[in-house]
Length: 247
Image (cartoon, rainbow, N blue to C red; front, side):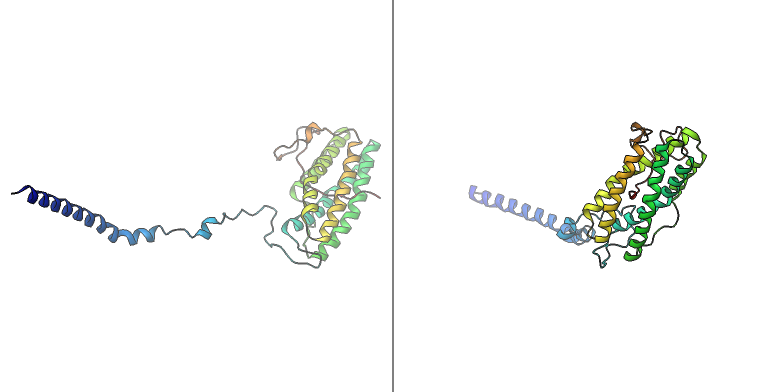
């Protein structure tokens, strides 16, 4: 056999081997490609680009944004209005108690400011709730009632320190909430309520600090207590509240 014949034959064998290899590769692709595509479909660009929905806030009542004659009403707006009402439901009786049981004039004065401020603010928030269709609570929360129970059990100087610390901490915590609502709300009625609440919080903080009984180190954040605090200087952490200044 000539060299040329051997060269042609060798080339034919190589081409044939390549063809068989290509056929072997294509058969599984055609047989199983459909199932592979069905099992793992390509993600839509729109879906892939969309972020996962954020979890609902604990304060979100699930009603979404409502349209009112005074502007949009958000879940945060409604929660703020409810918290203003809740503030009066425990701080008003606490103020009355301080007026009766306080031995220091400064404590009785602080109680007077709480009573006058919450009497007016409670009147306002009831009007706001009716105007906006927001259902308001009619009793303190379980935690708020626990604070009132602590005050009931305390006596003398221990009572006065506990009263001042509970109320001072509550009003310190409210600053973030009031400022956020005042800055973000598009509802004119809620904005006015937040403005009044902010002014009131400053008044009550000032009069509580004037007693000289505030433990500022004890105002730092801490996990919520499940029982009465071991000392009067470190009561459980109150939730945000809102108040109104005396006239």
